[in-house]
Image 1 (cartoon, rainbow, N blue to C red):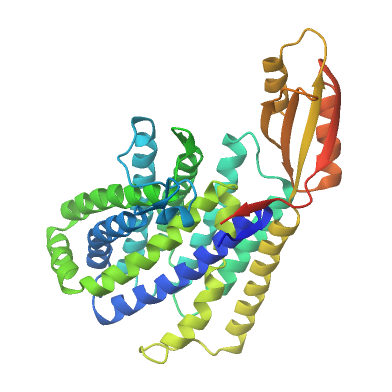
Image 2 (cartoon, rainbow, N blue to C red):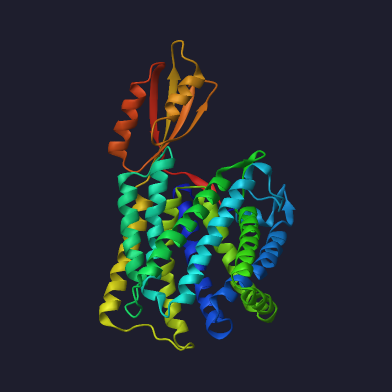
Length: 410
């Protein structure tokens, strides 16, 4: 049975599902670190050592063909056919994404291992949303709009408020590690995984399953080398823990696999900053799971009225920010007729330079060109694009058609 969903909302559905699965993963990690592997360095290396085999195993299962040149994995990502080796043109992106994941993970492990209670500073990892906004503003043609920036800031502070703890100590060194190590590392991971997802391999876009598989492989190599140099005892303890606690480590990496696959697929549908902002809803799902775990583990979910009010306000901000992202997007097609001596290629280049235009194609038939537009506000965005089109020599006339509904199979 084929399931269809509004294409406009697929991006958000993928990320919210990813956020929910990530919250489950966080709870499993909490159980492992509390009952089995208390040393964060040992846990960090052992989980990736096991993760390589689990990720490969799941990828092989998803590669099983089901007919019509499709595999089981195409249900999760239609671009997926089977696992494959890294192509030459994508190797540098995989290396950069692997370095980013390693740096971010090592920063997290350092904070957790060096500070008794880092719970007051770890929520500031959510500021990575603003880092991504800055990078996109400097590097991408379609830079974030004012509405996207405002919503991202709302989600960022909402996520910080929801996950903040008043029990931990705000340590300057820990904050520096988060702002200068963890956040930049995650920016590298998100930006280069998005580049990989948008890249075409053959006649189709790259798939999220192969991207996740190779990211785990490269991250494991970098992690193992660093920890071996940093402390050989931790490295060998991690190998021992990999065998001793294999079922639990397999469970957490198996669940994490699907969270990241959905996240990477979503990166191909929208900006990395917006994807990260929506994925911040993980903290909403994490609260009930934390309450559940508090019955079995020796920690209490703070019942301080002040803290509960802060968390509730944070949840409201996150929900409002995500809803704003989902409800303010406008998509349209512009059908264009050319005139004069200017070539179609020159026209395409000029139209592509307009902010908000995400695709331009030449046509045979009644119209010469079609441009796909994606904006946040119909009024201001529409007027800006119309003025730019009217100012381009070589355009005889054009017709704007807003997309009311656009469906995609999942």
